[in-house]
Amino acid sequence: MLKKLFGNSKLSVFLLSVLYALVFFSVYAVSPRTATVAVICFVIILIIEPWTKFAGRYLRIRRLAAVIMGLVFLFLFVALVVVFLVPIVVREASNFYSTVLDFFPSDTDTPVSIFEINANIDRISFDEGFVQRLDDEEREQLADLSSELKSYYQSIYEAEREQLPIPVEQLKLALQERGFLLIAVGDAYAELKPSYNSILEITRRHLTEKNALVLANRLIEQALIVPSKEIWRDVVEAIIPRTIDEGTRTQILETVRRTLLELQIWFRGFSGELLEKVPAFLSSLGSVLFYVILGTIYFSYYFPSFKRFSPHLYPKSCRSEAVTFLKDTYRNLERFVTSIVLVSIFVGMIVAILVRMLGLPYSLLMGFWATITNMIPIVGVVFEIIPLILLAVSARNLLVFIGLLAALLIIHTAAFIVFLKLMRGHTRTNPVIMIFAIIFFGQVLGIVGAFLAVPLTIILKQFWDHFISPWFERDISGESY
Image: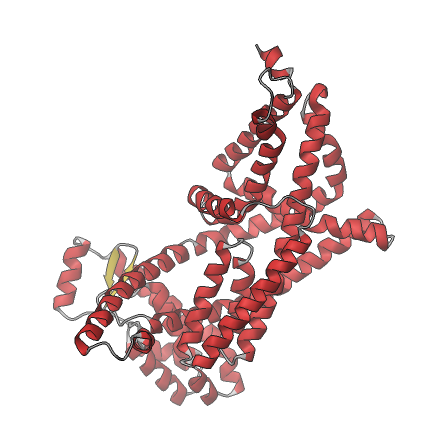
């Protein structure tokens, strides 16, 4: 039976490829970090290899020198982004969170999360009007001051959480009756009792007496609330026809308000859950980067040997079939990864420039976000546009809003054309299949699955083209397969 089974070259390659894929997913299940490092190293190779081919063919640079140049440039670029861009993006993200909440209705029933308190601290500390009051030395202290204030509020939360003697809901009701402000992280609630004197002592260490008093007062008043300008009301009222009677208008506004409140609760909960994972991510980031850099250096050097060896993972009798399958799969993956990275960087840079030209804030954040989201084809564009629309709406300028939408249409039309040009001559996947693949792998593998969905779909399509489709098209006797 086995001899008959493996006597068919296509079937042999198919079964062994499935087996190797199962081995990889077993490694991912046992050690996600190991699988992540392997995937990142392979992606970097897919980006570096086109450069090494170009350098060898047109610039007459030897492969080793081209690999070293490519890796140095890539890692230097990543280091510059991490050191200079990421801190600014994180600060802008914290402030943009408040801008997003300005769109939603006011909500005093949902407890304030620790992330929202941190966002309030950044918003208050880096407020443009307040910063203008400071001298150069005080401005240099702002980042340290913000960090110290966050640590103080975090320490209060942790101290109060350890002292919870009664069930959470009972404690919540008791504190509400006594008029205390509440803070929630996950399902736990705690009474927050920030000391004005403690906050003033922290601000005095970094600011002059007058500025320290101003900041301390603002923190006491605003750090434990989530303010909202309720921009949604202006937007909805502008859309509702003027011919509608006042009763119907009021009913529409109330319906929209209830819907947005539910969406706001989901958004705040989702943001909290996502940010709870950040400390664990950052703690493992250092070791992952170390192994990625080390693995990429060795993998890049030995990659030609690896490509020559990979067909030997299949029996000699079906090796030629395996070589064809592996070459087509690698060629399509290399072209897709290179194309999507170039297009994403292009879109990110243009979006950042566009936001700045329209006079809107958070240009670096929007450009960074556009770069990341565009690495998820089709679906990522939606995630990119939503915060941009909220940002434009917050400006309350119709011309800015229309200009942003028109520019985004032009940008993504150009990006789509460039992507198609880069993918010319290579296998392209049906957009509907890509959308369902992103949904499926996103559910199975989480956020990582959304980014890997299309590459995995490309691999599955190669399986289909090389093995499944010929089997369906075989004649009745099966001889054509």
